Image (spheres, rainbow, N blue to C red):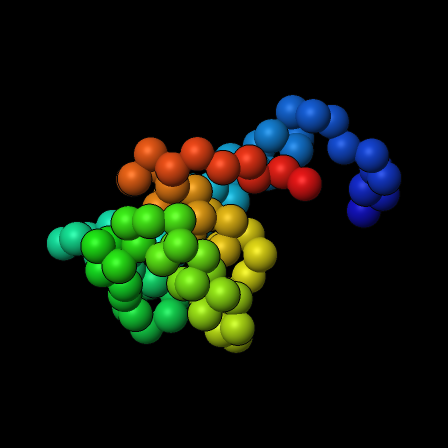
Length: 93
């Protein structure tokens, strides 16, 4: 079995990110005015409960404590809601 290289190309990293976004878009979808968390037994949040940055932040805090929520999923959730309501925020630290 060939040894895996320690460094990966930008193209490989880009492909990994694309695969992750596709997977996340299957796990978290907008249906009938709600965000549905498919990976969590179809739990959902109505979009109208996420229509301000303050409401979004409250939900981020709540979701961050769930065992099924990962940093990648939380980031995807923030982007999904932000895009829906045209919220502007910086995602990198």
